[in-house]
Every structure is written in structure tokens, then in C-alpha cells.
Length: 106
Image 1 (cartoon, rainbow, N blue to C red):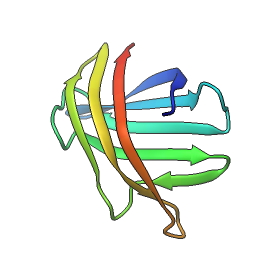
Image 2: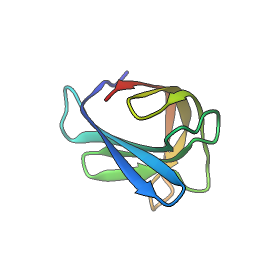
Image 3: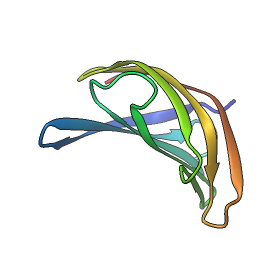
Image 4: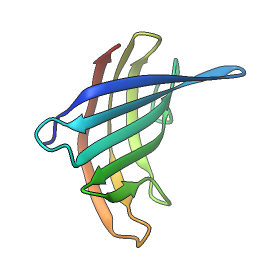
């Protein structure tokens, strides 16, 4: 299990919608970080559209393999949901992501 702290939620506003970009660094290892991008006010399985995990300079991210999410709250002050899936490097090395949890008040 990995716990990410120093969380930052950035709102990216566009015409007609707003995205939320969550960035965090692993609490006990600053060489590991995660970024999760999702639609604000968008719930369900298709809210998360990007996940990237960095492990000591190696970037794993969503590619041809999907990440499954279930966002139950996503608004201007709170994000709650779960996610899992497979992330891959540019060389197609895979990383299995399980039991991801977002429960953030910002």
C-alpha cells in the first residue's frame, strides 16, 4: 500500500467544463508520485481520464489499457472515489494499480 501526501488539487477551467488534477508525493519516498485527472462534477466510471505514476524517474501512465474508476463525489471542494487498472511505460512495461482511493477535501 502506498500513501500519497502533499496533495495538490488544480482546477483547469475550460469552456463548458472544469477538470481537476490531483498531484501527490508518496509520504515515505519522494521519488514516487501520482497524478490523477478527472472531470469536476462528473461522476461514475468515465470521470477519470488520466493517471500517471512516477517511480524513481520511470513514468507509468494510462495508454491503450484503461483505468477503471468509480467517482462518487467530484465538486469544487471534495473528491471521493476509487480506481484501479494497468499503467505502462513507453517501453510497454506494465504496472498493475489496485485499490486506489481518492478521499480529498480541498
